Image 1 (cartoon, rainbow, N blue to C red):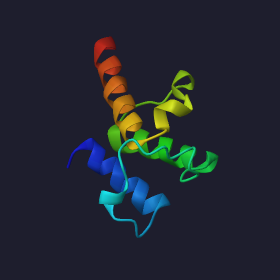
Image 2 (cartoon, rainbow, N blue to C red; image 1 turned 90 degrees about the vertical axis):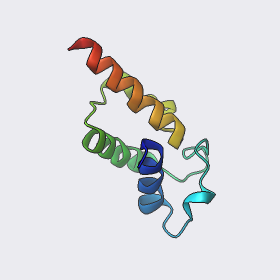
Image 3 (cartoon, rainbow, N blue to C red; image 1 turned 30 degrees about the horizontal axis):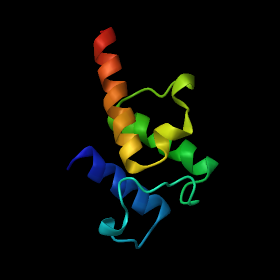
Image 4 (cartoon, helix red, strand yellow; image 1 turned 180 degrees about the vertical axis):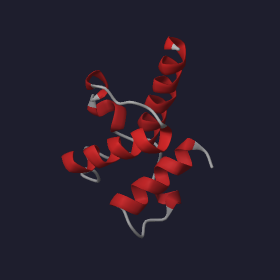
Length: 87
């Protein structure tokens, strides 16, 4: 399963139960549409850290990093690359 599918499944399970995966576009704005609120963002961040083994630092708390499935996937990819570069 790709990261995008994994992220999409989590978002649907936690925030949009009963919604078919095909109905959630990867660029759907989860924040502006109220799918995820501020507490939901915290839950999402904790899940991303645990599931993808990446650290989300203070500088990463930009809402744009968690605005859509696509943005979350990009954040994870960049966080992993940055982590690998520092090792």
